[in-house]
Length: 446
Image 1 (cartoon, rainbow, N blue to C red):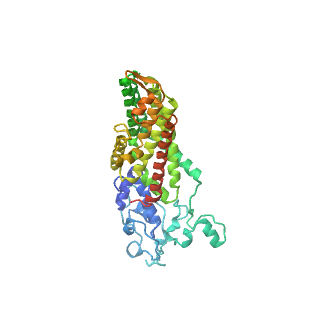
Image 2: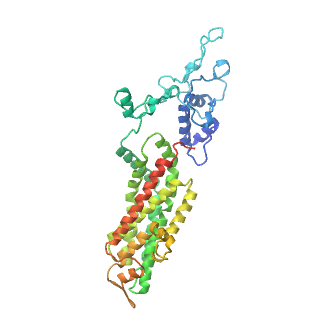
Image 3: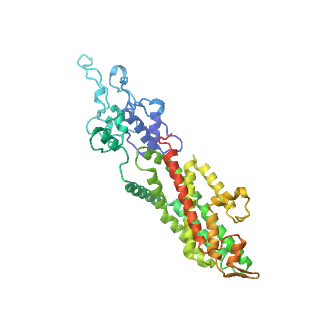
C-alpha cells in the first residue's frame, strides 16, 4: 500500500487526493486512509494498485468510511481490459511490482481477442502478499459482532472467546495491569527521547532555588526578616504553580493518537490516566527535592524539612493534574495556555496573601476554597511559624502571634490537613481528566 520514506508520505497522499490536514502527522493520516479503505467495499487493493500503477483509488463517501455494499463495482478500465496506460507513482519501489495483486480483475482472452469469461471482482490477493485482514472488504457485519463474550456464549452455547469473524477481540486484548505497564513504558521512552519538558522544568526550579537562596539568605529575627520569609514562601508557591504551564501541549499533541488507539479498544481510558500519573511521580519528586535541598539550609528555614518537601511535591502533583485537565478540554495549546494562566492568576489572587481568607467578600469565599494555592501557602507558613519561637524582639512576636495576625490556624496538626486537601484536588482534577477522555473524546478523528 505504500513503499517509500517517511518524508514522502505527504506527497504520496497528495497525489492520491487525500491531503494531510494542517497540524496532523502524515503517517497517522496514512494509517487513517488505509483503515477507511480497509473497511469499505473497495478494500486495500485500491491503495495497492495506486502504489503500483498510479491509478487513483475511488473516493469514499464523504471522505470517510464507506459501509460494506453488495453492489458490484464498475469495471476498471475501458471494456474491462487491463489498465496499463496510467502513470506509475515515481516513489513506488515495491518488491511486489512484478506481481499481480488482483488477478480476478484481469479476464483471459482467446486468440480472437474476446474474453473467455466475464471479469470477476474480489479483493483477494495472491498468497504470500503481506496484507493482513484483506478479506475484511467482503465481510458483512452482523449483530453477533456487537455481543459481548458472555452474551455470545449464552446465545450459542459455546464458550465465549471474545473474538469475532474478523479476528478482533470483543473488548480489550490485554489485562488492565498489562495496559498500564505498556503505557508506562511508552511514556518513559518518550521522556528519554525528548527530555526537554522534564529538563526545562528542572532547570527552572534549580535556577530559581539558587536565586531565592541568595536573595533571602539567613533572614534576621526582626520585622524585615518576617517579611522576607513571607515573600519567600509566596514566591515559592507561584514558581511551582506557574512552572507547570509548559505541560499544556503534552496531551494536546497526543490527542489524535489517544483517540485512534482507544477507538479500537487498544486500552482503557483509565489505564491511560493511571499510567500518566505513575510515570511522572518520580520526575516531580526529583524537581521538588532539587528546590528543597537548595533553599532549606541556605535560608535557614524552621519546622520539618520532610513537610516542606512533601508540600512542594503535592503542589506539583495538583498543578500538573489541573494543567492536564485543562489541556483535555481546549482545542489547541494557545487557548490552553490562556486558560491555565488565567485560572492560576485567580488562584493566586484568592490564596489569602493579598486579602486574608476571613476578609474576602462573602460572594467570593468559594474562590478561596477552590484556590489550590491556598493550601501550600498556609501549610508552609504553619510549618515555618508554628510554635512559640520568637521571630522579632522589637516588637516581640512569636510564631503563633504571626499566624494569628495572618488569620491562619495555629493548631499543630492542621498543616498536614493542608497536604491532604491539596492531594484531594490533584485526584479531583485527574478524575475530571478521565471523565473527559471517557465520555467527551470523539472516537473518530476529523
